[in-house]
Length: 433
Image 1 (spheres, rainbow, N blue to C red):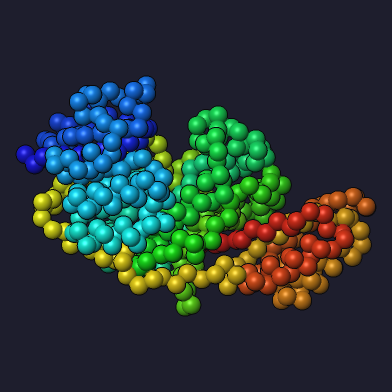
Image 2 (cartoon, rainbow, N blue to C red):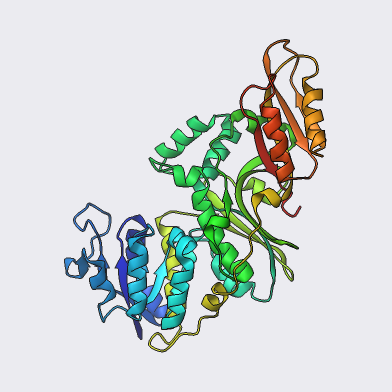
């Protein structure tokens, strides 16, 4: 029976879920896999906090360095989050020649180069299935299932909080503030939801997907991210009239001039499969040159789904010679040439434009003239019933246009006396349909 000594850093919700699964299913893993996962040490900042699981006090410590330096630990599982101390402790674990499993998407997105370089130098495994999509095995799909493919594009809903909020806005007509409050009450959103609603969490995950979908180093700062805080119930309703749904999409695709990588609210056709991914569920759609579209769908967060992904990594490591040197093709792929990510201003897209304008003759013609000056053409329009002298919504859909031209046109339109407030601009995607 192969024994794997685990050093667990963090006994929060995910760490607690991992401990619970490993202890309750220990015999199952032994019988089915021929491996005994033994939690040798646990580091927890608040060891006396009330929690569902109660590990023996003899394996608990508040010193994470004590865990990574323990000779009985073969694999360090990092579940403490953050990017400062987590980076320090993972680097130390690798130097101590421990294999590492982490769910830390922010750390890998922002400091992946240094971590993968050290893992390669020390010839240790570093696994991170839980960092993207919770219990959805999308990283394993990229590493193994789609290995024969050149990945052409990634379209993903990879933040459950924003997907839940947008679903509530779509189904109930709630505005953003109401839907956010409901998400917080149900535990889907943090007290400070900034990382989620501003698109930063999804951008962290997209950086990891880009690195392994296209092979190479990624500068996280090159990935454009835009959140959902400016999406209104009006935008949801008008999108529906045109036959679209608004989703926060993480998008990456190869073009002749580099890779597009961006997180943004997006109008998707109602018929598209991703438009029907609702509530807190996640989905990752990958297009390979051999397979076409492949989609991974499921719970993108939560203690047990995420712990399930951690265990999948532990099982992968258990199948290797954990005492011998590692030659990990995945890490080598992560350390390829720098991926050239295009500036958001260089992309081509269709756009949804929403203006609040004073209802008077010549307004539509004035806006159309400005758009025309920047070679932006209109494909569809909604103009509400006349209310002379009052502020009314005007919604336009455009044909494909360069982002830089749209931005230039909107800057001019926003300065017109008949426009009240800032225009709403949302990109549109057919996403492979």
